[in-house]
Amino acid sequence: MPTFLERIRARKFTSAASTAVDIGVNGDTQARLAIDAGGKLIWGTGSVSGDVNLYRHAANTLKTDDTLVVADLYIGADQVTVSGLGSATSIDGGVENIRVLEAEISLGTVDATVDGGSA
Image (cartoon, one colour):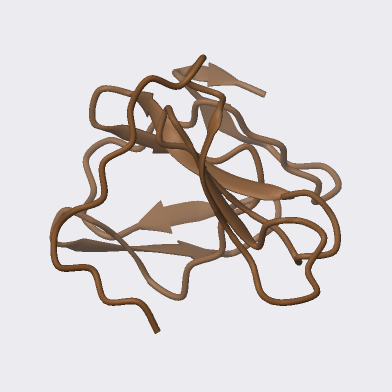
């Protein structure tokens, strides 16, 4: 088992998309975790290329192009709860602003308000 006494530093990649770190186990044909030079984390099974990611989208913003499942969601000190999944979905928790950048809702007929407009 390697022991790192100092930080690992890698520079001079061709682009931000170049793989900087590639981690797997014996027998894997693909990385289970890869980190590109731009800082994007990409996870996979080890038998196929990565299928889920997490990366810096803008200042102070993380993004995934996939699905993120969390047991509990907090915004600041406020826990966010979603109730009444259906035509009267509400988000509670004392949170003043929730911004939906991109959303897909597949619950049948749903009335929703996003960015001040109705959908």
